[in-house]
Image 1 (cartoon, rainbow, N blue to C red):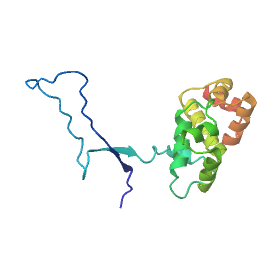
Image 2: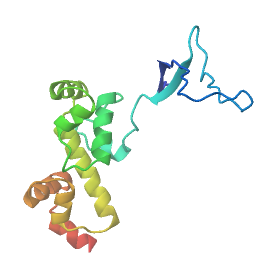
Image 3: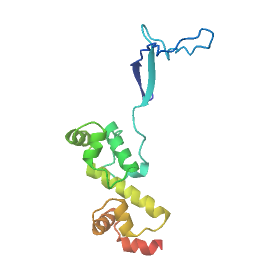
Image 4: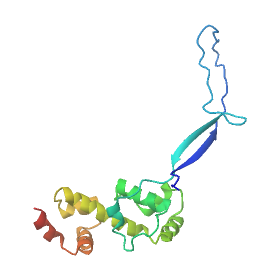
Length: 176
């Protein structure tokens, strides 16, 4: 039994024939609008939408303290996707809640069902992005702090020490 990753969305399409003052020429080829699909008593248009956002990288899921035992909810996956692809300096929990068309309280409640919080997800995404940046080449701490939307460089250094157990300056010596 597989998961159905698509949901069916059906919209009624009503075609109206309007004469906008132009005379129809019977000898010309007519562009008769054909129905996109046939329903019982009307023309319908069916569209397939993705039900779930893309799965996050496996490495990112390792950064959560208690690793998720069951599949993450749609809301949690959407928040992770928004933070992975967006500009962290501009994205706040209220912005994400608004894009999901829910209130910030509802977002917090839905994330808590997965034993998550917005801050937990944000920290995991920051750590993931930091590892990706340092995998390519060494980046000054000031630049990484800016890219990861830390208000101060010292905040980034404390977070880096919490993630790795090492000072950023020690890692700098290893990478240069």
